[in-house]
Length: 159
Image (cartoon, rainbow, N blue to C red; front, top):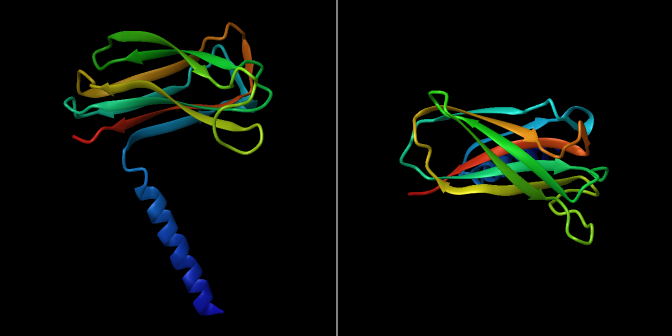
């Protein structure tokens, strides 16, 4: 039995290393869970990203995980960005979570779906330093039910 057990752990270790290497483009990714799957309009999940390479180009994505109780087919977000030095900007983004026929988009089991939305492609960050990104639900309701997690992903493009 011992040789089979060693083979199992070797195979598991190989699989973990293989899967980790498949995500080599990821520069930054973080997701925040929303308590009880409810996104309060006063809750602005915060993400801090340090940028050292201002010559590189990056693809910026938004991650959203929703469940079947989400009452809408789309999700509007405000993205508040604070650059090093304090300058701020706000963008509005619409994320389509369901098809026109009501079928949920994304991947995942049952009514729990994960989506990744391209926010900006091939952007350059103008200054070195810490960037602050806050996500705000812009659906005009106090309690937005059915959103489980939100996050950002930044991929560094190959030169």
